[in-house]
Length: 106
Image 1 (cartoon, helix red, strand yellow):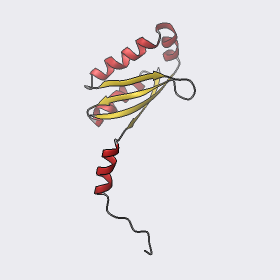
Image 2 (cartoon, helix red, strand yellow; image 1 turned 90 degrees about the horizontal axis):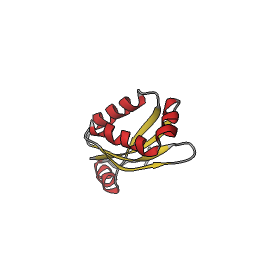
Image 3 (cartoon, helix red, strand yellow; image 1 turned 90 degrees about the vertical axis):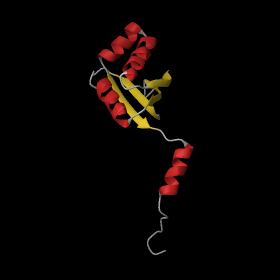
Image 4 (cartoon, one colour; image 1 turned 60 degrees about the vertical axis):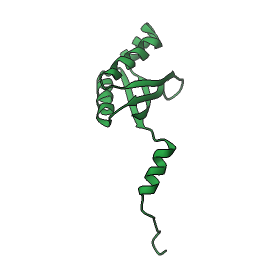
């Protein structure tokens, strides 16, 4: 299962809903949305600054991640960004598949 870093900012009605219902209800909504793509929440946090909410999601397929992003962003209440994460072992495997690079002239 692929892990994704999510970063979200509440917009307009999303901010009003957060103020009205609190953070737990918003997290629960993410948990429910993830069920539609067989995903789950690894961790979920609220923050100050450029990002309102962030955390790690487990989503089995890239198409599911795209569907989740489309579904949430289409509400207009949240701006969601997903970034696939790689383990150090994933990077090791990628490095083994990369042909040796030689700078021009070497």
